[in-house]
Structures are given as structure tokens and as C-alpha cells.
Length: 383
Image 1: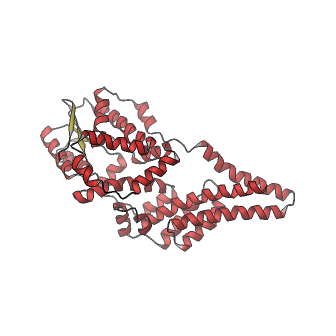
Image 2: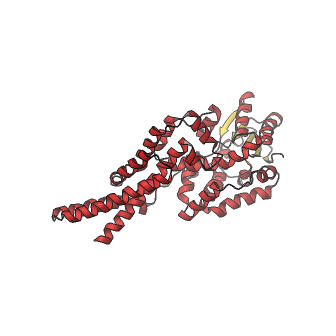
């Protein structure tokens, strides 16, 4: 198995790699030593570069930060995507990004300039998630959670068969057109424009995933240019849906106005009845979803009690409290955190303490939101 490359011109070579293949690690070192580039561009963003080069791992402080900043869903999605590469890397004896790390280390060994040409991973994931409809999200998660053994087929043939690479990319776009556009087409353009910034400043060897080889080379051959405005637009993360946000704000306002009206008219029975609807719907929604995540009984109780209150304040989330409770009661060890990052099985979301904290946080928030909507539905029916 050899790594394909494309010489866009005599001073620009694109080296396609598989992020988990030993042959790719060897090809990177060989190209740097034999082709003698002045600049080595790598398919990494700053955060991934720091994680890879410092061997940084998710720690307890980082896990707590994820909970507080509401990033649990994004971390879960990132873990699932990384797991697909990690599964392939197990048999190869390589971790994802081993060839990118080799590119950086070899460039430093020969005192070469290193350029990071990929978009921030969190920006990419957020844009991908927001570009997908409900059906696409379910389909993508189902595909990622499936345990089909396609790894050997991909590793043995991916780097040698450009038609196979194209079919794999098209497969992702079929599963989720929105995610496919962001993960493939947008990144092809972003990487191409970042390479164009350093093009002509010496011999450039760009090390990138083989799946991006065709798209990036095509854009560079068409003389795509540096465009700061376009880069800025590709880095923009759209806000949440206005309708959903409006509903989230309208629900507590409508409830408080309604209860205020009943209080003004002295209708204590209506206040009690609708208050019960609100507390019951929120209580059960958060509790059931926290239970589905495998939350500790105390975390389930915290989720249930917090939801009726947090649903009245868009700045708070029941999942934060449930996740924190889960973390304090079943505190992940360093071993748990390390094992979760390997994520060689979807079961780790329930069996691993770190994975369960993230799952409890994400699902409790979802259950709380569902409970608030159901509660208002029951209240509206009763009016």
C-alpha cells in the first residue's frame, strides 16, 4: 500500500494519506527527505495540533468545562467521528494523525516551516451539525454507531484506489448531504485557500487525508486565490434556529404571564393545576432521558428537580446540573478518561464514566426541552 500524491506544479505537492496507516507515516518522512520541501503544510487546526504534539488528553477540568459550556453534544459527535478512524488504526498499530505528527516532527528535524491549513475542528462540527436536518442527524449517528467491520477493506484499498475514495465520500454525502458539504466540500475549499496563501513562497509539501486529495488539487489547479472574506465566512458558525430560540423564550414568558393572570383573578385552582402540568412534564422528561443515559439515581433526581426551574431560564440547562452530579458521584479516573478517548466501542458511552457524564449532560438537556414543550402542550389543551 503506497500513499498517492499529486504535483500541482513543480513547487507544490499534495501527499494523500490515511490517518491510521503505517505506510502513510513512512511516506511522509520519505517525501520530506527526498523531495526537499521548504514548507510542510499539514491538515491540522491549532487545537488539533496542540493535542497531537503535546499528547494532551481530556482531563477532569476539561470535562467540567465541556459541561459548563454546553459542548457535550459536540464532544460526543467528535468522539464518534474519531472512533471510526481509531478503529482502523488499532490493527495498523497507529493512532489517528500519526502521519501528521510525523510530518511536524520531521519538518522540525530539518528546520522546515510548518503551516496549519485546516479549519478549527469545533467550527467544522458545529457547522456540520447545524446544517443537518433531524433525519440527517439520526441517520449519521446510526451510521457511526453501527459496528460493521469495513476497516480492513478501507485500509487495504483506500490509498490505491481513487475511485474507492470518491465512492466513500459520496457515501457520506448520501447519508447526510448537509454534513457531507461541510466536512468535505467546505474543508476542501478552506484547505485550498490556506495553501494558496503560502504558494509561491518556496517548495510546499501539503500532507492531507487522501479523501481531500482530488477536491483540493482540482481547486488549486484552477488557481484558487487567497480570500480573507471567504475564509471568514467559512469560519462563521450560524446561530441556532430562530424559530426554536423564539419558542424556547416564549414558553417561560407565556407560562409566567398565564400564572400571573390566574393570580390576578384569584384563580388558585388553575395555578395549582397548570403548575402541576409544568412540574410533571419537566420532571418526567429530564428524569427519563437521564435514566436512558445511565445516570446515577442522584443525577436523575437532580435532573428532574432542576428541569422545571432551568426551563424558565434559557441561560441555564438541567443537563449541566445532572452532568455535574454524575461527575461528582461517579468521578472519572485518569484511566476512564484515557479509555474513553480510544472509543473503540459505542458501549463506552454507557460503560465508561467519562462517556456517561457527557451522555447524561446531553440527553438530560434534550429531555428537559421535550418536557417543557409537552408541559405547555398539556396546559394549552386544558385552557
